[in-house]
Length: 125
Image 1 (cartoon, rainbow, N blue to C red):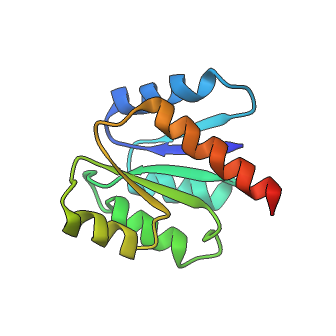
Image 2: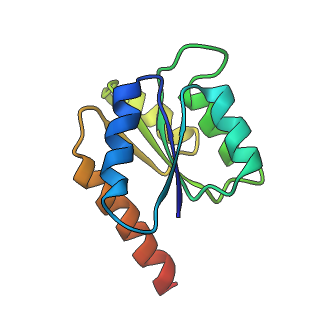
């Protein structure tokens, strides 16, 4: 399973890479901004994207999510990660098409459970 981690914070990308590297079967791909993320999504099959909302540059996480969910890549499972935890922020994130919205800080084990539950559900369908 290919997991794309998009965050401008190298420590966050490293944390997620370490989290998923403890389980076999995961290929972790990293991007530090929205433009890089879209290039990766266009060139590789990605199963799940963990996407920070607040990133500097041309595209923030909401822009990337909108791109994914309005394109041929819309089957990609998108989890928005953000320090913004107000109801309005969560609503906005989910309205872009995100499958889940998690506020920082979060448990890396919770992310593993999300992926494992998604895989289980996919195999039961």
